[in-house]
Image (cartoon, rainbow, N blue to C red; front, side):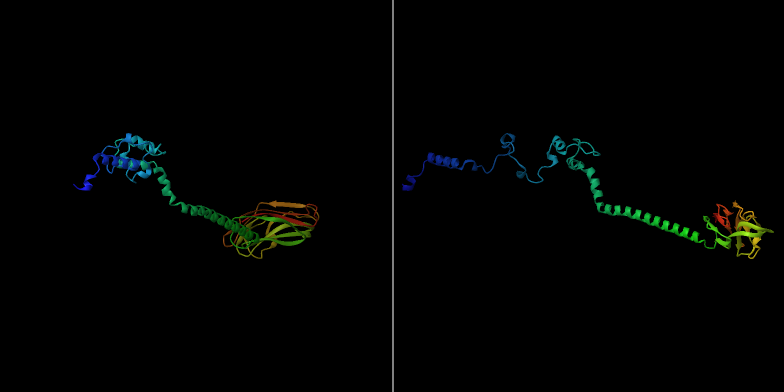
Length: 292
């Protein structure tokens, strides 16, 4: 008999030694394979399974109860349909879970144009700027029209109303304005012989034309006003002649003039003439409106 076989450990010694190793290993010892269905809720401690222990994508809505899905989803946002019923398929449930954010999706779509909103705001300002430019141009045009009217260029009537600022002159004449072929001239006569009466005063406005076959209606009436016609037949407005120093004043709304070309250049008037008024002896005052 071999000496080694003589000192072989007994079965009791083998079991004791194995028990010693298991005791020394503590919780570090585990079986390499567990029987199917041997671990359930009763074997799991609270919080034993954490997110780090769960494989990504391993838990889907198909594996969750409807109550859990509803609790996770929370209240449906405004404009989104209510909870998905149990009849929905798992795929539909998955999309329904995303439906809670559908109302925000509309804003996300608009977000793509957010950078354009800045330009839109500038576009509004540009539109206002265009209006301001148009207003400025209109103002400039109005000023130019007023300046042109003040200059009283010859030509066709403008359809405007011209105010002739009142002015005074002593004995003599002064041009008031020109309209097309017509000229209106203020005349102050002091201590002259008028219609055979010496030492008479008179203030009048004389009309003249550069076009033959013109016509006017005023204090005098000429159905055919020609250049060079007698001045005493061309009184547009006049005061009655009176002895020197006597005040006289006349305001007349009777005045219209048509050129030889058939155009109406003076559509109407309301002019005045006075002499020796306001205590100004030997002086005449004129002014009023002309409708062009």
